[in-house]
Image (cartoon, rainbow, N blue to C red):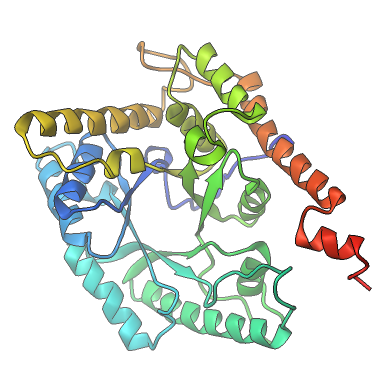
Length: 355
């Protein structure tokens, strides 16, 4: 299936130079400082800050801001609330204010709010309208509190985390007598991979004027076990056409071109053993720098228009279409499983369990 459009929100929270971000989830504070410092020096300006990493991020940003061309206002810090943080206004305000102070900013750029309850398998549990109504009410109550923080300029933008299409509609288009919230959803954080069919959710968010923050899985080995599938061969074909560019570069560029704010999975960099010798530290630092540098190249406004230096490249229309169609192939395989009765739903239907 080909994409009909990309995100073109008028009041986009992220400009073209802020569309690739880093998630701070390193094993140690020193590793977080090193990662964020390297990212800042390579023009990455968007960070999802995990709890406990605030002071490390503040130190790294303060160090890079000593350069006159780097402006603190260019940085975009995002925090996510745990699922149980549907709390009283004072406690919620205090929590966000504490994180802002640790980061050294006057206001939090974006706060992500999850749905009050974990998403459940519709095949595993029966539909419970009363429970869903209770969850929607709790979500709206907390959202209204956050809207008040936006009005007080304690928060700039509000986003959500892993909300489904019906949940987004329940919040943004409530049934009467409820009215729309005063502040609408600016972004939805979700897991995205070219191998996993989440593109229908991305298209829905874009149609609602919501930007997608993509927890982006690009690694062939992690997803498909080493490049055995047809979709992996598509990526390898593109790599060959693009002089062996890394899969991370190619798929991140695909995500950016499709309107996503991409947070590539960097576990292969973050979870390496802590170096003990100076030589080991230099080697590990170079691995981190090379990975971040390969991403930061994609932020250049000239990058995809007219290659100006040997590191630049752009995906052709045919290559973009081939990557888009991986999602269609995933859907086709799912439909085949349903028809064969390989899923719980299919087995119940085949056995007459549907009545």
